[in-house]
Length: 329
Ligand code: UT7
Image (cartoon, rainbow, N blue to C red; front, side, top):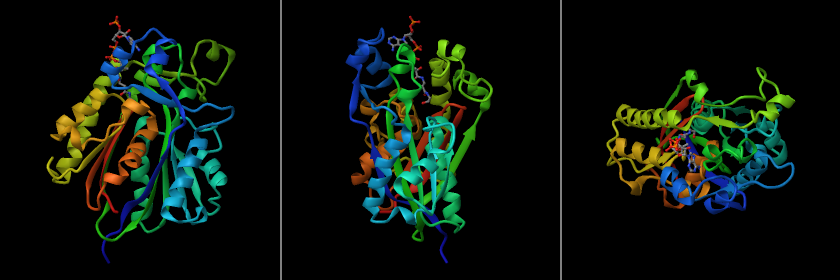
């Protein structure tokens, strides 16, 4: 019997309606459209408004659409991996909340926290369950409501992040398409440059943590930039080398959308032109776990069976990694 690969058989996404433009940000913090555009490539981002709506709200939209596209019922799903840095609650897992909301009564699931590399980690994890034969229908969700942990008085972070969610269905493929390889890395010493200071067990919420703005993203942008540019490029080049892929045979690069300059550096290191790079950062900013599945969703119509696709990400942790897959439909 031929090897089982874990193939994406459907992809869907959801972004909230509200558009926060650079122009509006100019009225909130001391910044300019020119600075944001030239330093990051971002023009606007989506914000989830509405009392009580968390990341799972966006995931419900993304996953219901996914199931409809594939023509299957929620009860057929066996596992949900919810990659997020902004779960609805510290517990229970957003995967459980999502399963309940969509009626995935036969699924188990868990949340996966690897900051901006979460979707890459999630794809690789799900692949193991498909390749082993344990499961036949797995949903990997990547989504974040970053506006819930962004300080809109901090111009160095609030201009970057946005809200959004994407989801893919993974199923066994016997034709050689699907996930071929993945490389996952981490370096916890990078924590100091990108983290949320309070709200966890080492520093629970208190009046003091709230007064000190410690429940927001803390980022030393330049330091993160240096690590991101080097490591995302290196890991994308490494997966190409390991799989004997030349730039000519790579059909698409799907990079995490943190900064257009990091994306350009990665593409250049891989030797591929801009026409092969999925970029939507100008419209959505950095949606953390959402960036890669949202790109796949938006580019789905252009993808062809057998396309060689490289996913690459870098994020807090530090975490980074790459997935090489062959598109299956
Ligand atoms: O997705 C997870 C991983 N995260 C990343 O990959 C993010 C990596 N980092 C970055 O993308 C960039 O470092 C940023 C976009 C965050 C910042 O860009 P930068 O080119 O590294 O700017 P900088 O931090 O070096 O700041 C340059 C100047 C500073 O002013 P002075 O000290 O030179 O006078 C900042 O105060 O720009 C100033 N600045 C701003 N000015 C206008 C910082 N933020 C802003 C702003 N508007 N929003």
